[in-house]
Length: 380
Image (cartoon, rainbow, N blue to C red):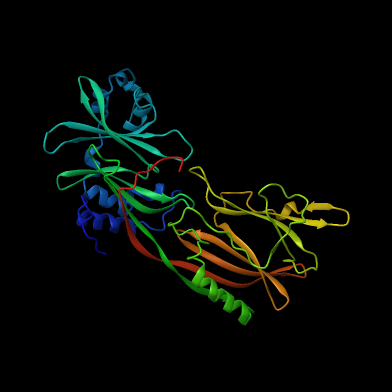
């Protein structure tokens, strides 16, 4: 990999951190915490001085005198943060000395307090026993942020994640200074296209195989998979048709119907996509299923078939749709497996039997993308 210099960010630094990102793919926000200090990401940050700018408890007590009365209760710097009065949600503090002026500055990392996991970073200096904010900026998440030094400049570096999948796919760098909010660059490593590999095919017809070939060309372009480049994801629809006659329809509700069980009776479906608005949950597919008897106007909910109740499953179902081939209805599902890897299953439900007809693995072919000067704001 090679990068050109981008404005104030040296090409060598971008390349070094790009390598760290490359070697840290396939980490999710849940399992990375267990491996962070042995990861290539943290190894590279240490080589750039990350461990040198953590302040000691003694320095912290000088900076915040109110901590002295709790000194016996504080065994490490992380326990001290809860007693800091000025920065109630403080989770980390770093100390640096300006290379030119020799003035001491502190980078204070605080949680915003919301469920989205965003952080607020303050760059401050001490003046007359008070801390004066030089600049501040927000970050999408904590991302194991650290201060590093490259040449004569300091940078705040952290891992960004795909909010829908909760996987790390980027490293953002803020140059420490008065304009740290806009003097930043994000290194992203995202899917450019997908490689499809068929791993099982029991009796798939030519028509099914041909149909899947068409998906390969359209599924990324049409934004049916989360690829890190889009704020919106479309919902796959096959041969299921809108059921305008369904009596439970309310404003903005859309119901479909199709005989996906191949029993001669249409099943009514309410499909939905769950888009997370908090730090913990992931993008997934939801559906409720019904049988509707129009003559008696009776609706029976098939509650045992409901999908999407549990949002913390290991392999999330993210798409479901239905297609007819050779007078039979086939169910198509896509699960998110890990990172940007997905699995497609083609299923035939018939005669009280569920049979997997075909399985494909969908793996990303990725590229590096640089995004400069993007200011993160919560609530967008």
